Image (cartoon, rainbow, N blue to C red; front, top):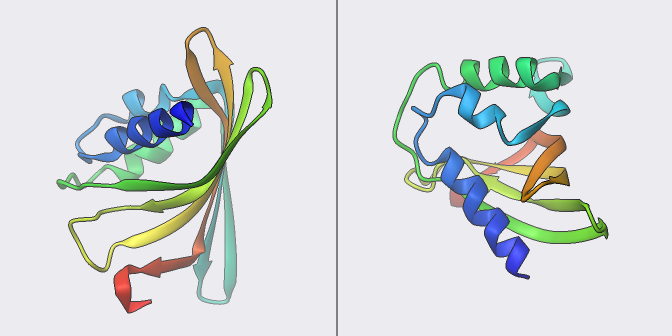
Length: 136
């Protein structure tokens, strides 16, 4: 339980101000990590994948290109150690609690313990089914 609490705080802290440089954000990932993102676009679903820390860094740089102050929140549905050095976490990411219509995005992470850090090996996010605030 203590690890889950740390995980929520560490992740949300990294998202609290969109001025954060992308290299700092990519430091939460292994060198060979992968991000998978599903979005809904005209004509259906779009699947995007970023592989490796360099691509992940560019991905976050694109997201953070227009800085704004935010207050984000992760709600962890579950966190489970599947091996002494492998942790899976699933939940919902509220992109900005300061806005009532901010997107809520489901996520699933696999983290690997390296030294005293739990770094992401993979992160999958489904933006296609996101909900917005209380408006659904």
